[in-house]
Structures are given as structure tokens and as C-alpha cells.
Image (cartoon, rainbow, N blue to C red; front, side):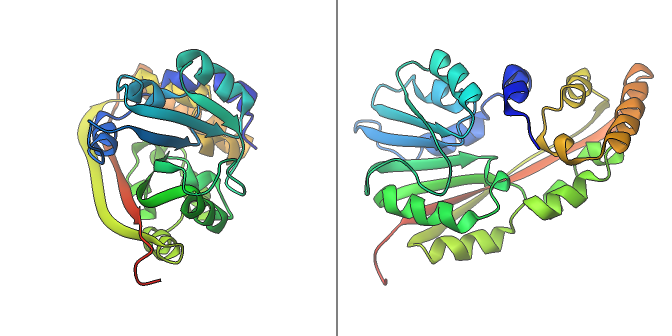
Length: 248
């Protein structure tokens, strides 16, 4: 089980907004008009902080961790934060122009509730943006060498992309775009990932048994000190949906 009170303390160590994903969100709008935006699973508010540079955005953040929200509130005081989850978004119907969920939906097992709630609180022609990864994309992560059980965890937690598209369509959310972001390079095992593993800053670390985690961390640390290389390959997918009442 993820210990959010501990996770929140170090969350920003390896969490920054992705500039490509941020631009994708901004491109949805006419910058001359005001928009109401919800960051679902906002964590410590990194994307909201970046969006706060645009005065026409009315910003909201929702997260299930009060510890995360305490940090986000200090970081983005102009945003409106609420504690909650996917089963009942605490907002009135037809309220938001944009809702986005960045690397968060794999934390949700009963994902159908989220799509139903998003459809309820999203304005017609509003956008819902999901950033996630397929099992195929996850299988290329360089840390699988050290923590092979991570893939077992991912297969239990991550939703198939086609499943998400079909579920969205069942809730009046039309799939309008798929964008893939990919990074690839060969490098020395980076210190930031060693620290990430030590602090368990990726959620899968909380689901791996203790012995497997310790063995993987030991090997990772040894390779870092011995300046071994790994092939960094990271790929994720952004799905864009638009609420449409046509043909329903």
C-alpha cells in the first residue's frame, strides 16, 4: 500500500511537468477566452503551477491525499483544491472546459466511475486528457532489469488503451487524438533513479515484496557506483477525448 504521507514529502524530487504534455493541454484553448480546468489526481500541483502563468485559467485540483494537497496549496494558492476520488467528483454538472489526469489512472481499479463522473462535470465540447502507458511501453523501461516484478504489478494496474477508448465512448467522450511521447538514449545509470528507488517514488515499489526490492536496489546501486550503462527508453501515450452529445 502506498504511504501517501511519506510519498508526499519527496514527491517533487522526480516530478516535474512535461513541457510537451503541458503544450498539448494549452493547445486546446483560445487564449483570449477564460477556461475552467480540473487537474484530477493533482499531487503536489506541478501542472497547475505551470498553468497558473495563464491568467484566463480558473484552476482546480483534486487528490485523495491531504498531504499532497497541503503542498499543492502552498505552491499554487490561487487554485481551488478539494480532497476526493473518482467515485464522486465534488463539482456540479457541466462545469469544466478541461479535465486532465496525468499518470494517475493506473491507481484506479474501478475506472468506469471516473469516466462517468468526468462526463457529468465536463461541458459539452470540453476535453478530457489522459496521460498513461501501455503494457508494451512499460516493458521497455530500463529499471525492469533490476525490478522485474514491476511488470507483474503493471499488468494488474494499468488499463489497455483500447479499453479506455471504448469506456470513454460509452460515456459520451469521443476519442479525437492519440499522441505518443518517446525518449531514448544510452547513459550511465543515473543518480536520480537510484534516489528514486531508495525513496520509493514510483508507486510500483510499494507493491514489490521486500526481498525482491532490496536485491534490486543493491544491484542498481552497485551499477551506479561502477558507472555501468543502461539504455533509457521511455514512452507514454496521451489520449484526448471530447464530450459530444451527438449520436447519443
